[in-house]
Amino acid sequence: MVEQGDIARVRSSAFFDARWYSDTYPDVARTPLDPASHFARIGAFLGRDPGPQFSSRYYLAANPDVAAAGLNPLLHYLSTGHKEGRTPNPGVLPTGPTPQLQRLKHLRDLLETGGLDAGPRAALKDMAGGRDGPDAAAGAAEALALTAYRCNDMAETLHWLNVRHSISRDAFARLAPLMAIATARTGDTAAAEAVANTVPQTSALHLARIWWAKTEPETLACLNAALTSASLSPVAIEDGTGHAFDRITQSVKVGQAPDDGPVVSVLMAAYNSEDTIPTALRAMQSQSWNAFELLVIDDASTDTTPKIVAKHAAQDPRIRLIQLPRNQGAYSARNAGLAEAKGHFVTLHDADDWSHPDRLRHHVEFLLANPGYVGCLSQQARCAPDLRISRWTGQGEAFFENMTSLMLPTNLVRTCLGGWDDVRVSADSELLRRVRRLFGAHAVATLNSGPLALQRASESSATADKAIGMGWFYYGARREYFEAQLHHHATAWHLCYPPDGTRQFPVPTILRTRQGEQSETLLDRVYAGLLTVQNDALDMLLGWLNEDRVKNHKVGLVPLYATTMPIEGGLSIHPRLRDLIDGSNLRVLCYGETVRCTRYIRLPGQSVTEPHRYLPTVHEGHRCVLAPGQVPRDQ
Image (cartoon, rainbow, N blue to C red):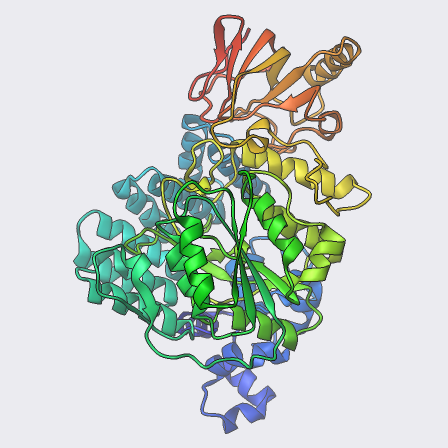
């Protein structure tokens, strides 16, 4: 999908030379396209260069992840590649991020993942003043804008977006949807529309306009403009009183793929989903790829979910209901469905989401046409029930990878991966990382699909859960799960997980227990401190842990952070410490957990003076020593 904004970025790039392009590739003159449109739509994917200073073939060869994703090399370089130190041609020596940009990333990590506030904010504001250079200043202003938006401060959001654009307008088109929505949320819808009209129209901009649509027909027009801009067929919204999200329906009959194509097994885990699953079922029944089976695994629901599914199954032989005798969690339920899947490919669908009728077809046709890829996934937008965008990426973009859309050969999942990790959240992204670890970073393509699915935003979803949720960044238990899985993937003999759910690596307790089952954990020792770099404090901790091991103590670790901490270690637990964590005798304690210990010890010689948003609650005897939002106690 090539949008007008992409063509405009090509045309305005210093690397694009229209005359050179036309002279070098004379066939361009025989097409109705101007040189910039030809390069954006055709030339880039033929390996052609936009000008003498940019080598498309070199860029794709040097960056297999870009090639695997099927991205336009010049557009990738302009958006993120140059910031990551990637080079436009072999004559330019590669450079890594500057020290200023490294510090920018570190401050963002502390503010977002680390859960600090005043310290990183003050440092970012200082950086936005420009003393570290324009790139760092622009990035700092952008980070402050995104943080303000997350905190629902629209005036502050607009202030920092304007600061960012005053430094450089290279990201104006990318951030225009966010800026327009922030403007609309201040009550000035005319100004919001003016912002939206200052840049080439994109699918994300059309979807953003739903924020100031006054009627349901206007909402539908915005949604359909977003879909058609992404080369997707329009939809309708049925008359009724329910949420618009649940009344989306096919407006035109899309072309049906042949029934003799490879069958796709779609696994839909459901638990007490009576209010939302009809939408998900209708979306699957409207798929233009007809060769699929929908396995709905009911995870011991106590409402009418199984009756609703059974009614649909009685009318559509492609739907099968699998009922589990006890509640096991979504990923365990999906593994139960995987065991019964008969399709050549397998993918997921959440019981509260909506997918465009062409979702399955786009994936299957891509994999059939590109057999070098192991799998593929597409994009989605997260929307409230009234279809307003409710989530952004860390770059302020509305569309992000849809993990449930990942489509892989069923036998590959069974024989090479075993299935999904048995945890409460994030096992879909963990499985994707396993695939890329086994088959290469470029083995799974991300289709530039636009809103091929809409993810429902609700207060009851795992993503919205305060303890195990996420924004555009990981924190708390999800962050620790991410760090633990990366360590396991890098050190394990194999990455095939047994179907019985046996743990392959330690994860936070809060991700292993079912919702409502969490209880206070009793430990002998809890150590808290800066755990990222090798120093005297870490050496002392390693000695204490050796003594604890001899005494068979149960021990918890609490990573702490400081704006002044060393950059080189990032926010990751030091590898020597990570090697010792087994999830039983030594575990990492996370936000949302409550622990009572015999003794609490802060690592000596470390200055940690800022409140931490994402701390566990820790009691030493009857004294509370750690709690979310507080400054960690010294002793």
